[in-house]
Structures are given as C-alpha cells and as structure tokens.
Length: 301
Image 1 (cartoon, rainbow, N blue to C red):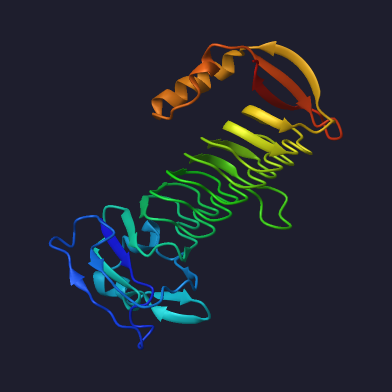
Image 2: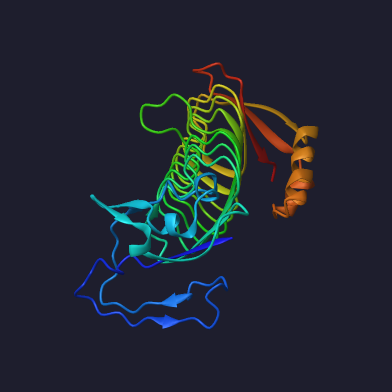
C-alpha cells in the first residue's frame, strides 16, 4: 500500500512558515500523517494522472519520489509536494492531506484501488477502464468522464458532468459504475452510452441529456430538462421537476428489471428509498424528437 500525503505549499512557497509535526505512526492512514501549518493555502491545480496503480506498482520508492508532476505551468517532482510512505506493489494507492487541488486522480487506470481521504478535484477517474476509486469527500466536475469500466464511489457531493461526455465528444460513460452518496451538479450522464450511475441525493438540470443507453438512478429530485434528447436508456428518479414536453406518459408498473436492480443495490450496501420497492412506477417515454425509446420511471404517489 502506497500512502501519499500532499502538502501543496511544501518546497514551493519559501516565504511561508511551516511547522511540521511527525505523526506517531506515519503509516497510519490519516489526513494528519504530517501536520503542516502555513500562512496561505495554495489552490493551483496539481495534475496526478501518472499516479495510478498501473504505473506505480513496478516503481521503486526512489523512482516514485522523482516522478514529474504538473503544478500549474511548472513541472516538479512528487517529493516536493508530498510525503510518501510504503509502495504500490499490492496495487493500492492512498491520497491524503491537501487533496482538494489534485486533478485527474485515477485517469485512465485499468486495475488496482485508489482511496482519497479528503476532497478531489476535476476529472477524477476520467477514461478509466478498470479498478476502483473511493473518495471520502467531495469531487469536482467530470467525475468518471467517458470512463469505460471500473467503479467510482464518492461519499460526498459531486460537481457537474458526472460520467458525461467532454465538449465535442459524441459519447460519455461507456461502462462501469459510479455512486455519488449525496448531491450532484448539472448535466450528469450526458451522452451516456453504457454503465450505471447512482446519485443518492438531488441533481441539477439536464441530467441524462442525450443518453444513448445505460442506467441513471437519482434517489432525490432532478432539475429541469431531464432526459432531453435521449435516444434510449433508463432514468429512475424520485421526482422530476419538469420533464420535457417531448415525453409521453405510458404505463404504470413495477417491472421485474427494477427488482433485480434493487437486489444489486442491497448487495453493494447502497441505501435506496424503501418506498421504491412497494409502489408502482409511472413510465414516461421519449425523447420523441429522437428515437423515443428512452424510459423515465417515477414512483407513483
């Protein structure tokens, strides 16, 4: 297990004063492996897309320390911004400390496990094809953008474009599983192709816009424009504030496929509204301006 405790200001702001206190057990996972007190917090993004288990597991401790990291418009070594413990031979990498400014965590990873003990920046898990990322905090925009496999679990809130397509791209998430425990922003699952995205709270406008296939579940409320332009795929939500007029009301049912999904949620220890398993769901079909094969299921009152 490799533990990386990030101190963005270390070695970079010579005028700031540091008071470093060694933790009693530096290998113990905590955001206080090294406690740093400094005048100003740095918010310049740090891109760590090369710190993935695929790459790190074959490197020595010294090689990991010297890895180049993009900090703003500068290239610096990893050891200048982080304290490192252990190795990644077991395929597990842990980020702790000042993780808010870290972008592209787990980008394009194919195996192993990454844990972030804190918040994460933009593009977490973008284009990943395997492995698992778990965040004990909030994440920025484009979490799981265009991912093709693997699992992302966020025990906090997420920004906009969760599992969405990048600007100009025809397809968003192509496979895998994303779970946001709390709320998410606007335009999640845009151009979704495959996979399963779950939001435990509310989300913003235009979620599932342009969906091609896949499943989007929202345990809370959605904003306006849900499912706009969707061709196929399934959206399940507790309440859709304003469906596009190009969706038509269809049957009421508790389809068997939803019950299979409920079983999968229980296996993953993901809590969902208990009332969902007891009520019929109203089906809306659309978008009729496209193929009209998309489905939005809302529990009946």
